[in-house]
Length: 309
Image 1 (cartoon, rainbow, N blue to C red):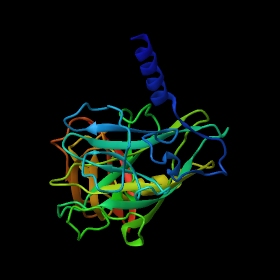
Image 2: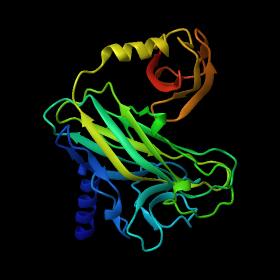
Image 3: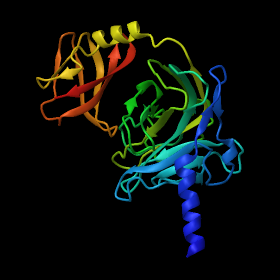
């Protein structure tokens, strides 16, 4: 029993303290996941949990080695059979809705004010439904794990179903050009002090029928230090959400906004809409607290944190 207990302590410690150290604002962190080989070991700093489902929520998940032939809810070390080229992927099911991501610690000696994230999004299995599936991207500057803290969505970094016309529920080769897409986005307005952390994660959603398998490969994160671009932030806020402190059960918008989504602090979508300039969205049915509102204004993705009183 003592040996088992000691091993459990070691494993728990690795989950809590495994981090990616950012040591320079001029050097990008890169991860192609090939180091996983045919194992169930995630790269240093990366973790996966059951975000929701009938299983134990918050439980650590280890990746299943697969080539897209599985339709079981899990995180996956995915690639063609015996190939050195690997990617980190997900399928959601009723029992397991995964989330996976990483923790980055600022050891640059300066405050990080933005990060440039890029990666290849790959699809390794088609679903059986007509829904366009999305694995949503979030980041947090106050989380200490994947299942706590305040999470802000960035739609440009979502994993969105690529093969939308294929509902055959079959494995496909995610390395083929037709089955992958390049993603990139600069997250600005940050103020991560030296020693502070940035968490990122992708959270899957369980759709009706069999879900597709979506993966991240050739990941890169470049931290930058500099001004916080307060003027740009203020301009975005005034164009998007006019009343970030909501007292009258209505969010007021300053511009035409498409694909408006309201997320709670658990990363769940609780409202969707499209609005006109000076239009409103009724949120009387939402509990008091913080929410993140995202949308598209002038073909640019924007987001704003609000507080409902």
